[in-house]
Length: 301
Ligand code: PAP
Image (tube, rainbow, N blue to C red; front, side, top):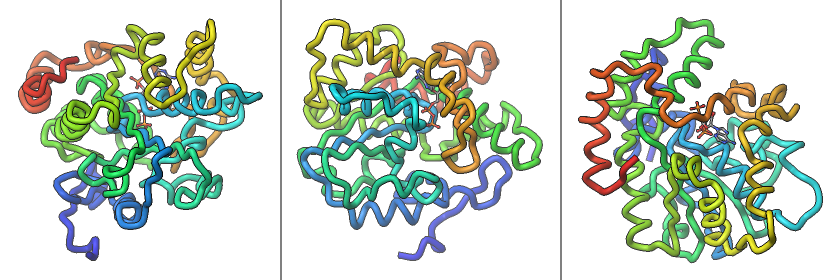
């Protein structure tokens, strides 16, 4: 199928930057890698696929899962590479300077990969093998504010005026934003995690913040690498903390993912930051268009 016939939309003034595939708005440059991944990827039983919408805690989850997988080995890869280099995002392979690091189709196992693709677009082999999926969700209002900051940084770097919060709320509520609609994205993984809990682990950013030790232990257990040693969870959490990662030279000066400096992936990491930005009308709109769907499914934030 040619991507030319798929519906296109502009996002924040950039014409045709989104393309609709099977009901979801993908970043247009991600469509070819995504369809290649869907057709050609043969999942193995020991693969771990991390999955998320944008700005819901991907960087944190990548750092934690990579550290869990490599625990017991000497050295700390996080001091040399941004988490996005260590765990490639499948549909952004073409954007990353790290895409020569390993061949996602051919690397020796266990492979640790990430995708922003919705569950329905994942390759059949991912759904039908015993490989594991770890999804991280975040409350829609903080996700939107995080996206607004991140995309405005890109827009401003491109010499354009920043996008207003009104416009960002419009895009978010209509579902026309990268990997949107938000509620459908979370709903698909949520339903799979209920149906098949040993296959799909559904995490929430807010729970990772409020009880990090419990959540990191769940992730490790789910990945088949339980934390058995005294102090292991605390060590992992320190290693992957926002404060530490943000201040590592590789992240404060590096530039590995598309046009963005690595520093842009580390901001405040606060639950409820939306209260500093959204009006009550905006909050109500998000609740009506996105929040109610999540509530109906039992996904509370
Ligand atoms: P991405 O989709 O571009 O990869 P992602 O990592 O999912 O972004 O989300 C970025 C958010 O996670 C930022 O939230 P904020 O804008 O509300 O501050 C970022 O600060 C936060 N974040 C990044 N690394 C960590 C970490 N190690 N611990 C907790 N939060 C983190």
